Image (cartoon, rainbow, N blue to C red; front, side):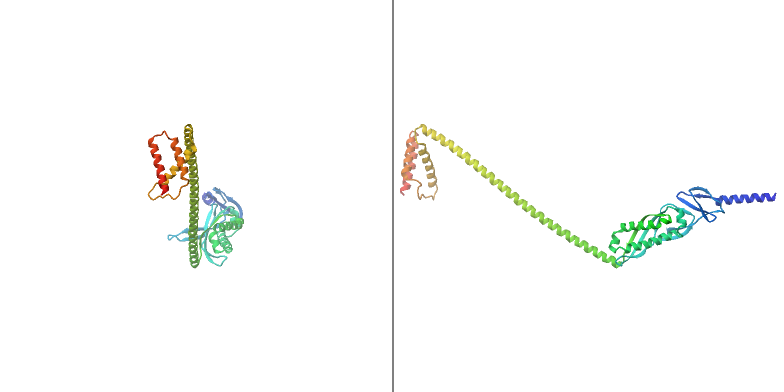
Length: 348
């Protein structure tokens, strides 16, 4: 009876131990590498898994953790874990000094984003995966920066990140790790180099400002000259058009005047012809009288010579008198007065 109770107690203890050690719960995006009697047996999937507590054992792996203390300082811790995280992990490596191609010591801080794609390789192909990734990243970063001078290092972050990612991804492939991204957080040259770079930057900005001012003045003068040129051209075109219009107006006016004079002469000629007189004599006399009137009008005008002989004028006036004999006594008196004044002026 006592032996049977002991056996039952032993079986109960075995069941409890088996339940405690044999039932393994694996969370999502995690896995365990199980060894049976020291050899790889299988990988456990997420959910509830059963293993033999004595025969099967999970294989531990080195892992790296980073957390901040109360002062904000980052503390890096490494310890062995049995569950392998399959999610993307970020490693923030400490600052390190690298030498550029032009022998400038620069402090660089890098971040690495990677993911375990093959847990078996991550466990059996490398002894300490976090340390191996960190050292590989540091040495690769030194090699890449050593091929660039300081200016290229500061302006080619994307190129450096891409090159680092390609090299690290190729090197870590046999460890079952996929490097997704590499980022350079800070690039800090020495203080004297930063001061020199700041002076160079200010000088470059001053030079650009002077160039922009000169280009602005040049453009302003060009625009001013072009505006003056266009104004002169427009003014010349306007004067040309104005003179053309004035000439056309004067020509049309002269044509109209000539047409009016031709019509007037035609009417006079017709009237004189009906009275059986000489139109030519009449017209000459009228023109002569008008010219004589202009010559003698005014206070200081003096007659120096006459364009035609007095006998011709008198005969013309006599002809007018004969043709206009029926106009009236007043007209005869006016005509005689004109003739007397002309003879008087001629004698003087």
